[in-house]
Length: 149
Image 1: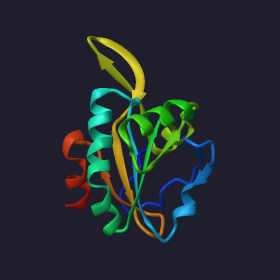
Image 2: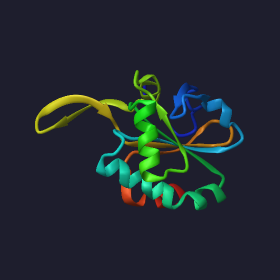
Image 3: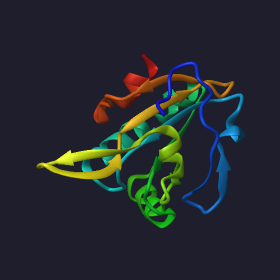
Image 4: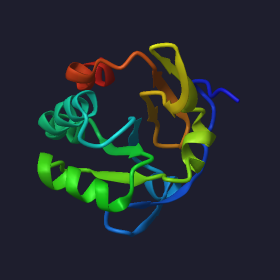
C-alpha cells in the first residue's frame, strides 16, 4: 500500500526515547514532520538530524512538530539525542509496525545483496492529520529547506 498526498496519515501508537507512548492523533491541530531514517549515529542520518536540529527554531516558527523514527531501540535513540543535542523526540519502531503502515520498510540492495531496510522518507502531515507532502528524495544536509519550500 502506498500513501498519497491528501490521504489521512495512518494512525499509530509507539514509544519515544523516554519510554513514553505517543500517538499521531496527539498532534492533531499541529503540523507534523514525520521523518523515517535508517539508523542512529550513521553519517547520513546524523547529517539529516543535525540539519533539522540546526533549523529547529525556524521549523517551530512555521508551526511544525518534528518526530524522527527508525527501527532502533529507545536506548539507542536516547544516546543519539544526547550525542547530537537533538531538541525533538525519536520514535522507536523495532517491530517495524509504523514503517509497514507508511510503506517505508522496503527491499533494498547494496553490492548485489538484497536486504530489508528503511526507505529514507519524510511525511509532512497537516493539522487535520492528512498527508500534505511526501519527500522521498531526501537531501540529508539540506532537509529543512526541502520541507519549508
